[in-house]
Length: 161
Image 1 (spheres, rainbow, N blue to C red):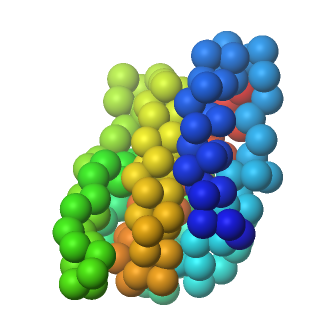
Image 2 (cartoon, rainbow, N blue to C red):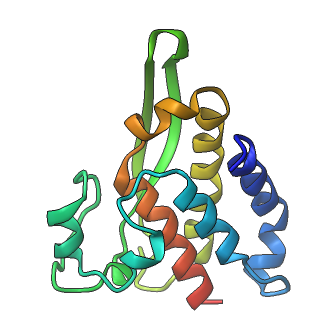
């Protein structure tokens, strides 16, 4: 993948937000999954995680940022998302810091697609910025749970369209 593919996808998603959320335009999940997989942060392709239980993921790979409340439930039923919201540091000193926060698209027991869309577009924008200037360092600093959250948000958006 090209260094700017992630940022270009984030820009395209931001421009298409209203049409996608209203159902006028379909979300290109395959393009998003391709970018997620190209980050090479998760051990497996993102689609492999959709049938996995929370416990399987927690024990095998999680970096413990996600709040997993029902370990026997599938990951796709998880309501917690990790939003990658900020990057700082010094590339020339190999000091890149990403910050995260929790988002819940089911906060009122009803699915709010805008929350997942925000997780997806904003996180991809921040990740893309790091990738553009320090792609080789991205795998070292990017949270597995944050990358999984991108896939879970995409999956939920497609299922609830």
